[in-house]
Image (cartoon, rainbow, N blue to C red; front, side, top):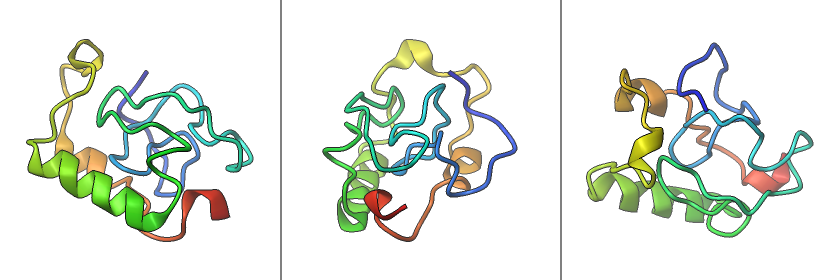
Length: 98
């Protein structure tokens, strides 16, 4: 998995909660079929904890308030930068509305 890239917000490979870029789209290429996997960065379960924008924002606030700790620390890139990653967060419509 990679935490960098040229993708802008709305990239189907990004976690809607934390902006981490995954190898596979958490909501599928069509944006409508969640994998139900967990984000190694913020720990959200795709398709369950990120179905509505309000839930995404709540999960993001909880993750940030907890110190933005990685759910899977072994997956954290050596050059990880929280502020840079958060630039890729899509602050808009519900993931399932894509």
